[in-house]
Image 1 (cartoon, rainbow, N blue to C red):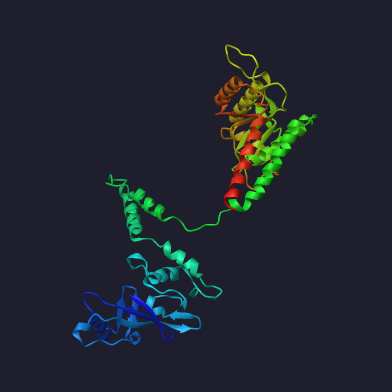
Image 2 (image 1 turned 30 degrees about the horizontal axis):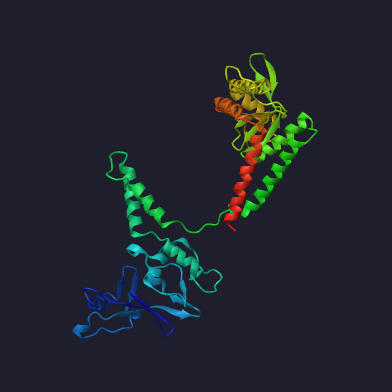
Length: 400
């Protein structure tokens, strides 16, 4: 199959094989139309070649008018490709079979036509035209024969697997074939926001550094407000923070209060206790039976959070209603607070001045409570900020 530009026309030149050209002329004479390559429907009026009477020339090309030049575009007759919308192909396109037909003779413009309610333009200056580069990319991502086969096998296999043991994992084979072809280029958001994110976390790091190095520390309330502000940058899943929420103690019939209640995007809550850093370590400098144990402030904070989490779980649905009503004006519209196995966070102490053995024992302590309480030092916060800054810097450098 060849496409020829001639006298303001786009000609499809088809060279028959095996059967020769006679069947084409016979169909045109008897039915007035003939289908070429399963997708091109030509009528007698489209034919511009003549049947040869020489037996040796029975495999000569048969030529049909596929399109007429209108300005800078060849207009393809809708009837030929069975289209609902008009098709305009720019005169400078490199015409070949692959422009019209994908593997297994899938009509490319037939598929595009079903997805569009407007005329189709490819290349050229028309305001609605598909750019030539974009069209070529589209062609490169049309399913291959192997991909179509693997997809069909995968669909059938997924149904039969409920009743039989398939010989092969066709779903895996389909994904393997699909992955080999790769994906079309996509515009990623990360490079666009990398510079802003890097500066944001650099500013946060400098602020925390200055707070820890300041000779005079602010009041405990102000310190907690500034630290929880930083934490919301490190934990963006939390969309609301409430200071000293009431927690009902079912045993003493009193109300307990934790430093902050954290509410995530689904309404699920966690708790946080924030302690001002002190010069003393978070674990004992000496050992008890060769172990450094947590200092009283740390162990007390952990115990306090464990009790509050226990109280919340006991409070259940009544607690959810109470807290939702209390903070209804500050919650996003329609959000309800959920008590679903809350976890806790303790921000306390410094770890930069710990010995290797103290760090090891402190890590053991952290892992002991990790399923319920996350213990974070101020040096941990600095380290996390450094890693995040490095992450955004790497993205910026990679996409320069």
